[in-house]
Amino acid sequence: MAYVIRIKEPAARWLRKYDREIQKRFAVKIRKLKENPDLHGKPLRGALHGYWELYFERRFRIIYTIDYEKEVVTIEAVKHKDEF
Image 1 (cartoon, rainbow, N blue to C red):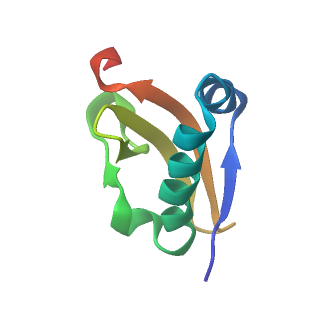
Image 2 (image 1 turned 60 degrees about the horizontal axis):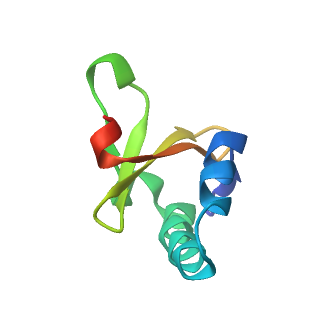
C-alpha cells in the first residue's frame, strides 16, 4: 500500500530556496513516507494535534498530515527547528 505524496505551496517554496543537494536529500526523506508514514514520523500533540513531524537534516522539521482513507500524505510545511 503506497501513499501518494502531495506538497503544498509553502513547503514547495521553501524547498526551491535551497540547492539541489538539499532537494535530493529532502526527496529521499519523504520517499520513506510513501510506504509507512506513521512509522517514520511522530504525531504532534496539543494545538498541532492531527499533524505529524519528521526531522530532516537535524535542523528542519517536515510537518505533514496523513489521510488513511485516500492514502495521501500531504506535506504542509517545512520549518527550521527554531521556528517552533
